[in-house]
Length: 390
Image (cartoon, rainbow, N blue to C red; front, side):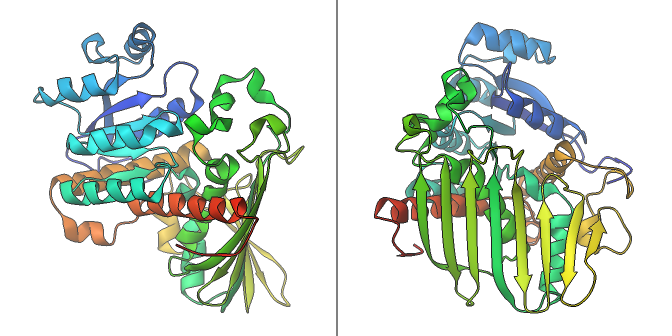
């Protein structure tokens, strides 16, 4: 990866839905997708305002004829072209994800989708079955999982270096929405409106991130039951929560907690995952993403650094620069987009054997995120009771 050599025979012909002018997440998608020449941006429906979207697309060097007023028109017109799009990224509010993703899969187009994938397990099941039926890739942008030391943690846990896993402590608790910022910020306003955001705010918006990281680190750890309590400290956000606590029991006897919050005053991100075993513990903090803290009982703590030869091969595979140089969010997203492209290329060649063992945040990752949110909301809305994980 450090050499940046061509990995695919040709780039994936790619389009975006949403992510237009003023969209921070849209810029992240484009920067990540285009970095390794694995994707080529050839079309888009960038904005609900067709003229504004066309102007924006032209400024991205997309042909005016391929800057469409909406995704339905884009799918119809691109299907007529020999060089039509092969993949699309969905960077729109949550409430649109299901309909757009479903339409793309029905049109034979690979998908990269923002999370949450949809609002209900029923919808997620429909998507998963459709993707499997049409042999298409659905990638979900759990962007932090592109940080390489997450995969070092996975190998260390897999190899028994922590011993028996006992506790998983997860949090993503920032303070940027500790007041009603949505009154003056459209990009926040839709996130606290159930019509657009779905059944939760912080559980889906931030809580699923550390949860997914724990699933990458410990893919065999399954939740047995959970209990959730959620609050709307900014009252106008009710019934959606801006703070939530979740306690989970795993099938192997371990316990886990998630604190998801937008009202942790003074905190920048506050996303941490700490895994505690019978021998040692690991901790990762997204504000220092190139370091993994490893603590063996009775010995001095170790800080494992990204890019160093003492790491496992899985943690070195996606390095873009040598150890000591900081890599950040854009590189992590680029790692995911490179993996999305490789998976799409394999699917196009019908190389199912390769895809069996190739990791990327896939449709199942999106499904599990929706499932977790649904169970948390069910617990909280029934008086914060324990519920079996369904």
